[in-house]
Image (cartoon, rainbow over all chains, first blue to last red; front, top):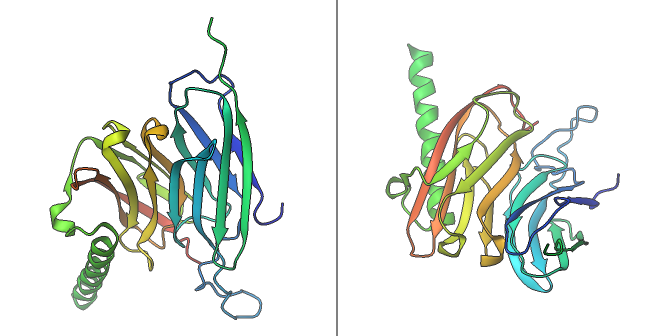
Length: 112
Length: 133
């Protein structure tokens, strides 16, 4: 997969006002800028995510600052609590000007 | 004996480094950030590879009172791994991520609360092969 792609995972059943875990993976090399390429012996330029933001219907949920100590193709998990169905937006940037976003519909299970 | 004293010198150096980084990021003196049972940091005790160590942090305090959580790996060249700011929509102050360890090290999960105080949990991870290339 190409750099900047993301996959978001949410539970199958989401209830109003009950916190649930959102997990996502972002395809990214997360080069620290100190690693040497084995073949050429040259230092590979830093290329890593710097910030990730989660929004629900335009309202901020969480924002992350990312350093070089996060693994390549990183996975993250955090929680979300909503009182209505809506759109979750994940937006993220890297240090080489890359900027991406991904949305995920959140639908609340009908009350029984 | 020489090797031993060299090692402790190095350990001291990295301790000073992480202390400085923690102070810059959190605005607190690391000595004032006390270990607290309300922060729970979940990491493996032994990691075969340092490239991909799963970390989970839960803060058992209502999320409206939690401002942010920061992760530090003491012996990494860049000790501040990441930080997350929460909102009330977060529901609970929870973070999981995958972290690199250059070598065996302490890891700290520091929670900054909205009243300005900071608390943490700390664990040791033994790494067989480092993950910073």
